Amino acid sequence: MGALFGRRDEVLAVGPSGDRLLGAVEQVIRVLFANGDKARALLKRVVPKLGPERTPSPLGIERTLDTALITAPEKRDPELFKKLDAVAGRVLNRHN
Image (cartoon, rainbow, N blue to C red; front, side, top):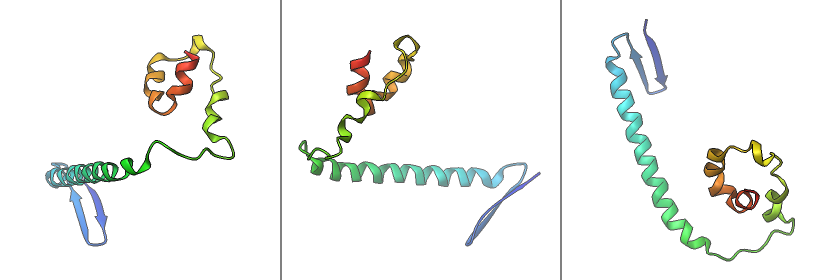
């Protein structure tokens, strides 16, 4: 059994032996690494411009998570809390 993958400018046929698949996977990995490099470079340029000061939202969105945590403490997954620390650490650590 084979498979066809295609774009307007290229069609890649992958047979049971997977001969061409290796080349396609290598190309995808190269693009992923290149995109990662581009993202790191962008963050290095943008993050310093953000600065520590910001104007608080008139809607109070900075405090939205304060009342969002409803899971009972004994039901909370400690591993999940560790993963969420980067985005909600201020609130999660207060509720631990």
